[in-house]
Image (cartoon, rainbow, N blue to C red; front, side, top):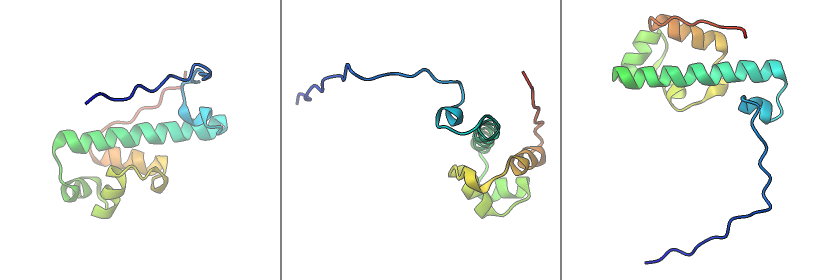
Length: 102
């Protein structure tokens, strides 16, 4: 079965990224920086859980939180986690969080 070819919109305008999607979405520099850090740390914690093969219950024990909080983390509910809390979770999992200012 052949798929119908869809023409490419040649009138589309591509705007280069600033390097921070939150800045691109219109957030101010400070808020965009914090949101970017939260998103990055959250992704790293989800990856840690996956790489270690932890169940949600095991991750909850390691992080010192309820299993429902791990569920929120794994489902990407970024609005439920402050940067402070994400740093705390990483530290409880034995990870070192460093911040570099460029």
